[in-house]
Structure formats: C-alpha cells, structure tokens
Length: 482
Ligand SMILES: *[C@@H]1O[C@H](CO)[C@@H](O)[C@H](O)[C@H]1NC(C)=O
Ligand SMILES: *[C@@H]1O[C@H](CO)[C@@H](O)[C@H](O)[C@H]1NC(C)=O
Ligand SMILES: *[C@@H]1O[C@H](CO)[C@@H](O)[C@H](O)[C@H]1NC(C)=O
Ligand SMILES: *[C@@H]1O[C@H](CO)[C@@H](O)[C@H](O)[C@H]1NC(C)=O
Ligand SMILES: *[C@@H]1O[C@H](CO)[C@@H](O)[C@H](O)[C@H]1NC(C)=O
Ligand SMILES: *[C@@H]1O[C@H](CO)[C@@H](O)[C@H](O)[C@H]1NC(C)=O
Ligand SMILES: *[C@@H]1O[C@H](CO)[C@@H](O)[C@H](O)[C@H]1NC(C)=O
Ligand SMILES: *[C@@H]1O[C@H](CO)[C@@H](O)[C@H](O)[C@H]1NC(C)=O
Image (cartoon, rainbow, N blue to C red; front, side, top):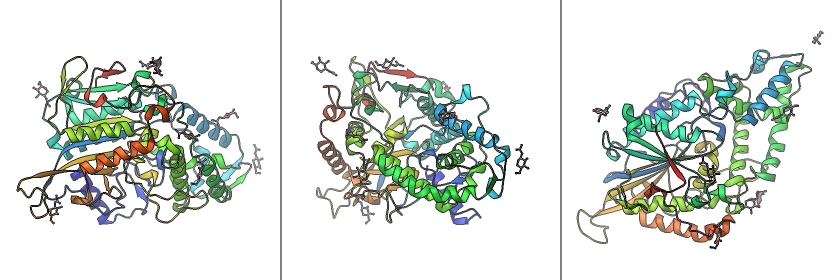
C-alpha cells in the first residue's frame, strides 16, 4: 500500500488538469474519473488526507499485525434502485422535450445494465478491479504478514440477498495470494441470521429487533427539503417541452454517476449534471443518512460491532504468534493479517465506535457545518475500509518506565481508506498512534457505556463475545473457495 499511496501523492503533486474534486483513474481505483462526494454510492478512492499524518510506518516501529474490515466492492444496483432507473428512463422517453448543456445526452440515455437477471445486486467489473487491486496492494504493503505459498483464512458476512460480500473476499484473496489462491485461501462465510451467531458475526445487528436503521429519519428529510429544490429548479431550466424532473428524480443523478462509472469503466454523463457545490450538498445528505441511520447520532444502533472490535483488539494483545485451541480440539494459527468483509451498515457502525469521531457535534439538518469530521465519502464508499495496525515500537530509553534498552511497546494505528486517523484523546504514540493497552481500555469503556449486548439488541441471553476470529469450527460458518 505504501507504493500505491506514493503514486497517488505524486499524481496530485504533478497537478494534472483535473477538477479539484475529481478522483478515479489512479492505481487501485476504477479507470473512470468521478466526483469525490458520492458518499455510500461512490466507487473506492483513497483519502482525502485530512489529518496530515504520514502514512509511512513511524521510525522505530514495525507493523507485526494488521486487521481490516471492508465493505464489498462496487456493484450493480439492487432491484428497487434499478426499478427507479427504469422509471426515470420511461419518464424521459415518454416526454417530448429538448435539453441543453450537460443534459444534452438525455435523449439517448438508457440504464446501462446489459443483462439485469445476471447482474442485479452482484459485484460489477469495477468492483472486481477494486478487490483484486486491493489484494495486491495489501500483499505489497504488508509483505511481513504473509509467508509465500502458505494457507490464508479470511471472513465474510453471508449477506443472503446477493453473493457480493463473499465474492469481494474471494477476489481480494486472489489478488493477495496470486495463482494458487484457490488452494491456499479459505473464506469463512458467517450466517448472521443464525441465532447461534449472536454477537459473533460480521453483521450482528441482523439478529437485533431493537436495531432500526431509519436512513437518517427526520433530519435527512429536512435536509432534502433544503438542498434539493434549488437544484431541481436549475436543472429543469435546461429543459424545454413537457419533461419536468421532481426532487426524487434529481436525487438519483449523483447515484447514477457513481454506479454507471464503475459498471462501465467510463465516466457517466450524469457526473456533469450537478455542480461541485451541489455535489457537496448531496454528500451531506449521505452523511446525515449514515450519521442518524446507524452512526453516532442513532442512539445505540451504532454499537453492535463492539464485540467484534474487542475481539480484534484481543488478537492484537495475543500477538502474531498465538495459536488457538478450537471447540473440536484442533489448533488454529490465524494469519497476522485479519481480513474481514461486510456491508455498509456494519462499516458505519464500526467506524462510529473506533474513537476517531468521539466528541463530534451533532450534524445539523439545515446547513453544512464547519469543521465536520464525520464524512461518509471517506470510508463508506464501495470497498470502504477501516484498517487497524499493530505497531511494535522500540521504547526510547530516556522515557521508558522500564528503563531497559531493547524493550518494545505496542500501539494501534487506525486508517480509513488508507488515511491515518488519530484516536481522539489517545494520539501521543509514534505517528500519533494510541498505545494498545489504552486503546483496549477505550473499547472496554465503550462497551460499558453501550450496555450488555443482548439487552440492547433485544434478543438472546447468550454471550456477547466474538469468537469467530479464533475458531473456524462454529456451526454457522461455511468455508468458500476463492
Ligand atoms: C416505478 O413506477 C411504477 C409505475 O408508476 C410505480 O408503481 C413504482 O412504485 C415505481 N418504482 C419505483 C422504485 O420508483
Ligand atoms: C413535440 O413538441 C413540439 C414543440 O412543442 C411540437 O411541435 C411537436 O408537435 C410535439 N411532438 C409530439 C409528438 O407531440
Ligand atoms: C503453487 O503451488 C505449487 C505447489 O506448492 C508450487 O510449486 C508453485 O510454485 C506455486 N505457485 C506460485 C505462483 O506460488
Ligand atoms: C442462516 O441461518 C438461518 C437461521 O438459522 C437459516 O434459516 C438459513 O437457511 C441460513 N442460511 C444459510 C445460507 O445457511
Ligand atoms: C435529529 O437530530 C437531532 C439533533 O442531533 C437529534 O436529537 C434527533 O434525534 C435527530 N432525529 C432523528 C430522527 O434521528
Ligand atoms: C435505533 O433507532 C430507532 C429510531 O430509528 C430507535 O427507535 C431505537 O431505539 C434505536 N435502537 C437502539 C438499540 O438504540
Ligand atoms: C522515540 O523518539 C523518537 C524521536 O523523538 C520518536 O519519533 C518516536 O516516536 C519515539 N518512540 C516512542 C515509542 O515513543
Ligand atoms: C434464553 O434462555 C432460556 C433459558 O435457558 C431459553 O429457553 C431461551 O431459548 C433463550 N433465548 C434465546 C433467544 O436464546
């Protein structure tokens, strides 16, 4: 990933004649350009670098373990979204109109799916590229965390509606492991609707009757009523005849921009319809959708990934060499790279509990605030990735409490789409990392504040401990070949 990040930096330093907010076409991304403000409907892109913390491993430290939780890659629309695209197409083609400027393409526009029966809800070729490239980037970035031609286990949410999550894990494994991936790799797909998986899957909220994602509720609706009407009026001003778009039509345009670009590999004409300021308003609608839907503003709806986070940190405490005795008595020695794949709701829940957005003010429903840190486009993109690194650092003799030379101390570094984020209140380690033991305490405190998993969830009286990272014999997981 280091090589990859540098390439991106170099490109931006050279100052190509691109609009400032345009991304894509860089290593690891889809080949087409697209605006960087599409929230959860964005193809993947690294950054932006909002914290100014160097990506390089801090001096005196090595990374001896890493973990990531990634959303599936870019995909085709789900059936309900595709129905909206078809309705929009029908509306356009039943009208008698002329259009100008960036809307000149309307008379020839059709939804880009070539074979909806085969494609709906699955990964698109743009997603295949994101995931394969991701696997290669992680192999380059963390060569010390994998021994050539050795077995590698990773995990995915089962997600019954489509195979896009497990397919993301499979494609990552192919990029990471290369030509022998099918024999070396094994994806454990976790059935989050099996009651035995309570607090022990990659979508634990699926079993919780108390989990309600209201997509941002009244705050999101209020913002839609503020930001959309002027855009609707401006866009309808480019039409003459009997075609008139309404707010729900117009709110689809940035969505179509993102999806069409990753499905076809070519920039969608919809990407030029909104101005940059309008795209930022759309982006804020995505922020509200996630912040109040399953994030920091959603009561305890955002807390259900805490047992998983605690389990990742337990592995960081156990260290890279640890072997685990499984339920059936066999021994499992997991990889020091902990690779997991899931969906946007879970990415958003997890990102809200890792300490990087603590103390964030409530997002207002009527304006875009200054100093906002929680921005969905920076991590809930397709293939959006929350990364953790265990830094093993040499203790400086003068400041060491042990005073002994050669002593090592462990720290945690958090990355969102390859950008380092400081943990609020715990950023005084090398490269603004957080001491592992302190981070473990922060997670414990968050679990205390959240309350007992079963009670908050409204289901089950079992345990609230995640064990799947150290036990591959659980009855609700099945092995899939990359
Ligand atoms: C599409 O249009 C049909 C017919 O007007 C309507 O019944 C349906 O609800 C629309 N679907 C969506 C997803 O907008
Ligand atoms: C389309 O609109 C134009 C301009 O108003 C009109 O001349 C033409 O007859 C209309 N065509 C149809 C098929 O309604
Ligand atoms: C694939 O595995 C075989 C058998 O272990 C080995 O000989 C070969 O070198 C491996 N290929 C690669 C590309 O590592
Ligand atoms: C997942 O678990 C549920 C509940 O036990 C079950 O109905 C479903 O068939 C399982 N799915 C798969 C793919 O095994
Ligand atoms: C809307 O935002 C306010 C202020 O943050 C919050 O108190 C309220 O719960 C939010 N409403 C919904 C439905 O999420
Ligand atoms: C989730 O949010 C809904 C509102 O959308 C709220 O009624 C419910 O209490 C929240 N659940 C939890 C566990 O906080
Ligand atoms: C040791 O000191 C160097 C130089 O001041 C600093 O960069 C590094 O972060 C320190 N290491 C630790 C573990 O505090
Ligand atoms: C909770 O425990 C009771 C008593 O052991 C058991 O009958 C019940 O099935 C359990 N409920 C769940 C959801 O696990």
